[in-house]
Amino acid sequence: MKVEVVCARPEGADCVSLTLPVGARVRDAVAAAGLPHHGRFGVFGKRVGPDHPLADGDRVEIYRPLAVDPKEARRRRAAKKR
Image 1 (tube, rainbow, N blue to C red):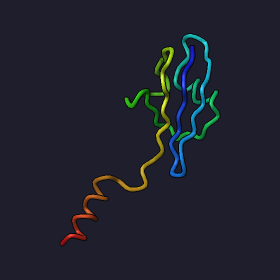
Image 2: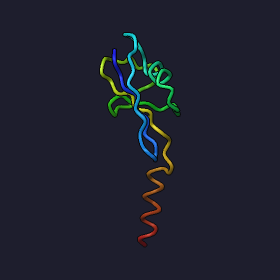
Image 3: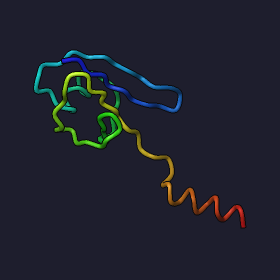
């Protein structure tokens, strides 16, 4: 089966197309892609765990950690407006 592994970075995205055996899981795709990862994954925008089974044509997304908590960022913007 064919899958795509995508890792977004501030300077651009890395994308690797792979052919994996039927029954492969997210962890198998990430390992085969050789891209850096931080333990958070998704398939077509939906968060999944590393043991999630893959289907032909899936796009595995590797999420990077947030630089700032979104709630904290909103608090800072609100404080600046005051």
